[in-house]
Length: 262
Length: 289
Figure 1 (cartoon, one colour):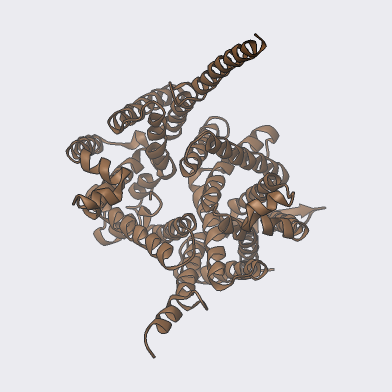
Figure 2 (cartoon, chains in turn yellow, purple):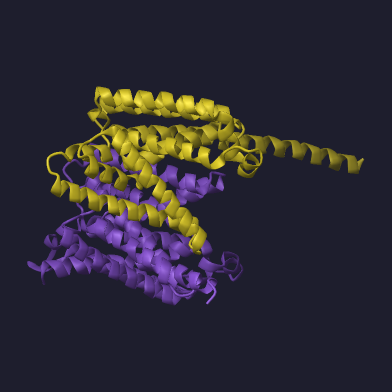
C-alpha cells in the first residue's frame, strides 16, 4: 500500500505544483484505491493468486512512481527537495505544522475508531453476517481503507516507505499475543506503537542514528518479547504449560499402573 | 563496446535471472517472500562490507546468501509458531532492513550505499564500474556478477529440474517420493538471494521485485507447461528491459522505473490477448456469434 501511493503523490505534485499534505493525501488515496481495484480484478479474472497479484500491482505502481519522480526532478527543478524527504522520511525535518497535522490525524483516527468500533469489529470477523444484518460493508471498508491510506501518507514523511508498513503490522501483531479481545488489542497496539516511537526517537537523539529504523527495531523487540513471554499465547508459557500437563499425565499413568498391579 | 549495449546487456541478464527464479516463486505462491528478501539483503551487503571492508562481488554474494536464508528460516519459524505467514514476512524483513539501515549509518558512512540508491538502483552507472584483470578491462563488474549467478541458476534448474517441478506442483507427492522438499525450498531461497543481490546494485530493490514476479505471472497466463513458462518468462524479462530502456532514454527518466512499468504494460496486454486464459477470447466466446 505504501508503495502504491507513490504515483498518486507524484501526479498530485505535478498537477498542483507544490508540496501540500492535503493534495498528496488525495492523490495517494486515489492511486491506493486504483491499486486495490487492480489487484481484485486480476485475482477475479485470472488464475494468478493473490500474493502474486499484489506483487505485480505494487511493484509496477512503484516503478511508475519512480519514473514520475525522475520526470519531476528534471522538469520542475528546485522544488523537488520536499518531495524527496517526503518519500524517504526524516523525522528531524518535521516542522511545527506537520506535528499539528499528525496530532489532528491521530485524534481523527481515535474518534473514527470509537464511533465505528462495533461495525469495524463485525466486518472484520464475519463479513457475511455483517451483510446479513444490514451493515454497509463496502462503505465501511472504504472508510477503513481511507484511514489506512491517510495514516500511511502522513507517516511516510516521519519514517519512510518501508518502515511505514512495519509500523502498521508489528505493534498489532505484538498486541495479538496479549489478548483475545479486539478492544484491548486496538488499545495495546496503539500503546506499543507509541512506546516504540518514543524509545526510537530518544535513542536516535543519543546515538545520532536515523529515527525510523530505530523505531522499527524497538517495535520488533516488543513483538519478540510478546512472542516469547505473553501469558497464554506466548512461546514460554506454552512450553511451561506443556511441561505441567506432561507431569500430570505421568502421575495419572503411574496411578493407573499401580492400580493394575494391585 | 558502447555504453548502450552494456546497459542493455545488464538489463537482459537481470531479466533472464529473475525470470527463471521468479517462475518458481509464482508457482509456489511465495511472491511476497521476494519482496522480503530484496529488502533484507541490504543487511547482508552491509554485514559483508563490515567483515571484508570492500564491496566486492564474492563477499557480497555470501553475505546476501546468508541473510536471505536467515530471512527464510525466521519466516518459517514464526509461521510454524502460529503467526500468519504474511504478517511473519512483514515483521522479519522490516526488522532486518531496519538493522541494515542502522548499521549503515553507524559504521559505513563512506560507502556509496544509501537507502535511496538501494530502492531505485543506478543501472546507468554500470558501464563505468569495470573489472580489470592484468590492467585490462574485461567489461563491467555487474555483468560478470550477473553472468556468474545466471550460470548457478541454470545449473541448479537443469540439475534439479524434476525435483523442483514436483515439489512446486504437488508437495505431498514430493514428500512421499522421498524428495528433500525442505532442502529444495532453501536451495530456491538461496538462488533468490543470489539473484537479488546481483541485480540489486544495478537495478534496485523494487525493480528486482517487479522483474521477479511480473514476467513470470505473465508467462503463467500464456502457457501450462513449466519448461515453456521458464523460457517465456525469461523472454518477457528481456523484452521488458529493452522496451523500458528505450522508453527511459526517450523521456529521460529513471531506467529501472521504466523497465518496471514496461513489465506492467506487457502483463496488461497479455491479460487480454493471451490464448485460452485471455479476457478478450473469453469475452468473444461468451457473446453469441
